[in-house]
Image (cartoon, rainbow, N blue to C red):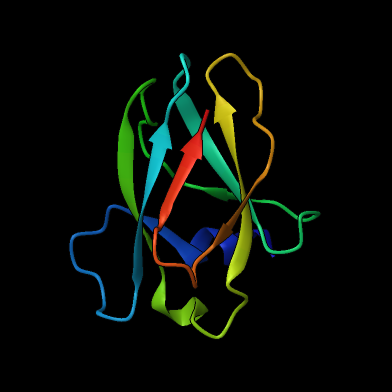
Length: 104
C-alpha cells in the first residue's frame, strides 16, 4: 500500500495528463515542511515526495496522478515538519473546485 501511495502522487511534474488534478500545498506555518503523508482511510499512511520540502510561508504545486481517478475523492494529508513534529490530518476532497491544502 505504501509504494502504491508513493506512485499515486507526483509533485510538480512538467508533463501532466489532461485528466490529472493539480492542487496547491500551502505552508502557512513557521516551520519548513520536509514531507507529506497521505492516507485514503486515515489509518495506513504513505509518503508523498516533496523534494527539498516546502519552506515556511511557501507553497508548491502538486499533481494527483490520473490513474487514481477511480479512487475515492477524499484523502487525508498531514505534514511532517523540520523539527520532527507532524500536523493534524487534513481531509482533502479532490472532487471539489478549490484544490488547495493549507497547513497552519
